[in-house]
Image (tube, rainbow, N blue to C red):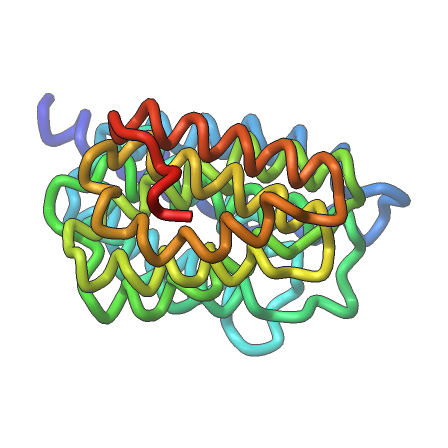
Length: 282
């Protein structure tokens, strides 16, 4: 009975897996595939994720790699990447730390997708892909207990991730939502996962560089990111503060009033976080 039960789950997962592989063909006959296919696909992904929870690593690993090759292989329709990253985000959230056993396979593709210019993609497709990708990475970083972020992976992801502070894809409202709900928490958790001062400095420097961006909303977002990072690091942020001071001093007199006010807020909050006045630094 136990063996029959195990194989029942095994074939169930393969069946649902095959259903997912067929989904993109539906989009050929739809005017707006994302909304309709996304809803159908969401139900399938939820069911697949529930069954994956009952599979052994040995059973799941080849299925996951097969899905990856199907979605990211040469000539694959772009909608398969949406499926891949939506599923990966769901699995990363459900499997938590166990997902790191497979996540190494996603690091380089994630960095590539963050930097890839999707000229043939619609804006809604690109936003959905980016949101799923950031959600997946956040879950990986959040549940990392095995020092998943090696120096090599840190070097691969740092610049592409921080560059998303300047990615205004989708317009002002979607950009602000993505920054607040996805990107800032993702970058903070990434920083926490580094566990290494030598890796933290390049990440911090990249955030500071975004504080000099020509677009005011990007400078504002970089200030939000800096404050959230300092709020999590607490006293561990102190060694990084001297490097940030010239950038903060510049934004204290920014041409944009909102940026200037946000910078003043950041300085006040840093004083609370670090427990000392910062006037001597300026």
